[in-house]
Length: 440
Image (cartoon, rainbow, N blue to C red; front, side, top):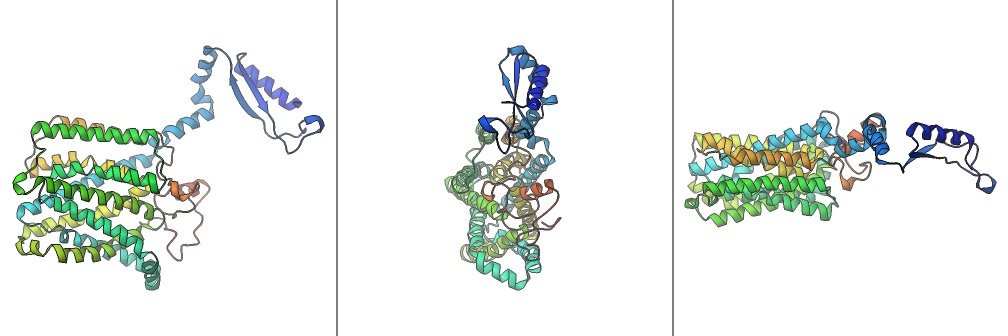
């Protein structure tokens, strides 16, 4: 039987919602009286609406649901919450900065080839040296030389695999420019999206929302318009006079595959380890692997390379831009994902043409701006079904992200801030489980 308090509450609620909407109040208690009677000390009542009335009553309620119904407001925020946060705009901005960075490195690579200098392995060596000097030095400062040595001994194999995929991605992508054009190589890079989504789904158990799939397809649709534009202008064939076009496209495909593998591996590691450790290890092992590869495969390139002030300037610009790229990518992995990172790079084709207007004498077809807008719309659609944490909440770190590192851009940091401050800082002394505020 219903207690008097619950009964009065139900009558009052029924009166306020109209005769066609029945409000039922259930009470729960820790025990019950004889005959199934509810204890006279019930907990707070729970209201459940049974919309049995006509359409007009439902519409009247639905019309005020956002303003008067906290549950409806919460559902709307859960559905589109991330688009309303500043993190979304930060992610969007970082993605376009990275697209400009990759376009800049591609441009410098093409300029080097035009000068007669093609050293695809050695070209990225200085980038790994610079990353090593900055981030490995800081890692040693945080861990101590013994702590860093333990890191190498315990987890070095993970970073060797990551660095190998990264080095080969750079090598094959740069090598592709010996045989193909900047536009053709960039267009093939979308294959990395397929690799990232597949590996994340199978191994990291990432389940993509329909809006994410639609967003990816929308971005790929924008790429299709770019391909159509190139076909109309007759530039799809590339500059075959510089070598075998098919060979260049295959090298670009291999580079995109290695990039996809390294993207997923880095997203996984950076969710569990500090940023400076991950970037420092990429620099350390990348310097060793890339140096060995340059000594083996670039000897002939060194003998025939042209060395002048222009080449030195191009190598310097390439190194600085690529180092900035490597610094920002892990932050984007934490705030978003490897999949979003790759669809962000799709706009690089548009930026490549903008830069090429002055550098290479390109012309902009009217379909290019349309393709750019469509790709950017895909970015919004991609996050359309995400809550306020977006993709920062990783599927492999647990419900409260307890398996992840407490650092910049992580969902764990946001969750603990929402719970009244940062907790779990007992690992700060060792520097392997926590990043202090402001440290990348």
